[in-house]
Length: 135
Image 1 (tube, one colour):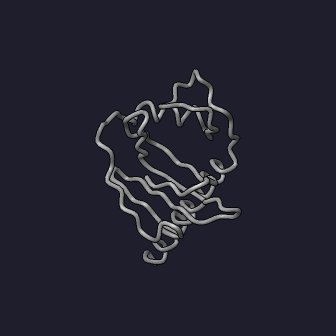
Image 2: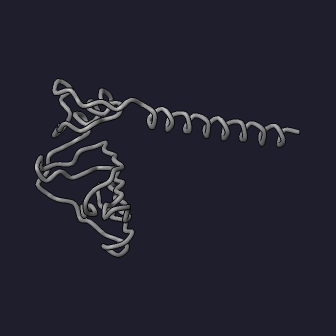
């Protein structure tokens, strides 16, 4: 009887975890996207749209660091087809041919910014670009 109760509890915890994670992903996906305010002091801030900008900018100010050492980057796949790029500190880039000569690009992790000379974290983006991202 005790074994059955443990299994039921585990299933409830597993289901609750799935519901919680799904809710968080839906919240982020449907969160309003607004232009960043210069007063938010995001790391290497541009005029790009950032979801949850207040939280993301605070995290970037506290978790990003300057470094002259660029990451080592490994590309898996063909450059003119679907490919995945990996780097350390953890950074993932996914490129796939889209429509009208554009590329679908997804990136997440510690992004090295050549202009800022450092690693910016957290970063995540999914967008269409004119050519695949190589770093």
